[in-house]
Length: 156
Ligand code: HEM
Image (cartoon, rainbow, N blue to C red; front, side, top):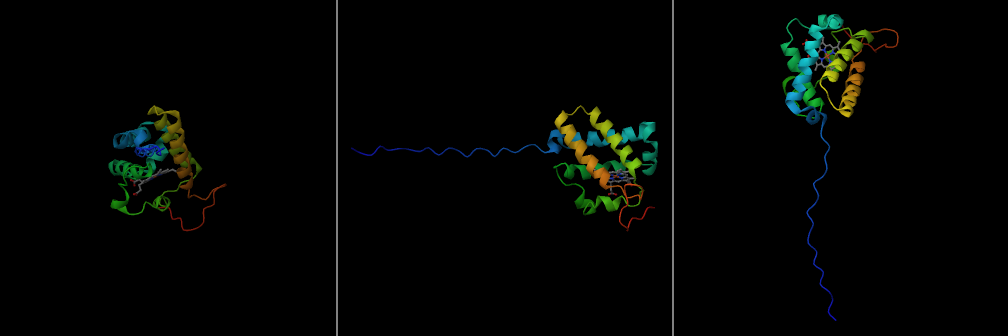
């Protein structure tokens, strides 16, 4: 009795499943631009952000570009910030501005309003909220009860 011949057809390797980045889930370049533009539009329009607005330059075109370039990479898309300005060193770049709990909370309120308006799915919205909240908190550099940053902070 001859041994049965078993032919094995190679099965193509399954495509590795890759989850979408926040950048992709937001709609790529256009989606991130929309987020940044709405964020600064609200900062300019809404009276409750007047103090936050006053910390920023009168002309905000470059500010908008910078946040867009930074967020593009930060959200998992192309890094557009570092080739222009080097390592973000975000905390250090905020040293000229006195950022305490009030400033952090106003920035976050403006961002939360933006995220709410964009009509994102709940999961993405929560993920972005948490990432922004952590970074905004880390940006605090003003000595006040509950936050005593170590030295080297020079406000303008
Ligand atoms: C916590 C409250 C925050 C305040 C009050 C604040 C305020 C500011 C101000 C006044 C500037 C200078 C704008 C200009 O000169 O054009 C700036 C720049 C910038 N901010 Fe913030 N910011 C905050 C949090 C954040 C967070 C959470 C992020 C990112 C997730 C961020 C990203 C940036 C970037 C990328 C720049 C441009 C840096 C540069 O290249 O000069 N900021 N911010």
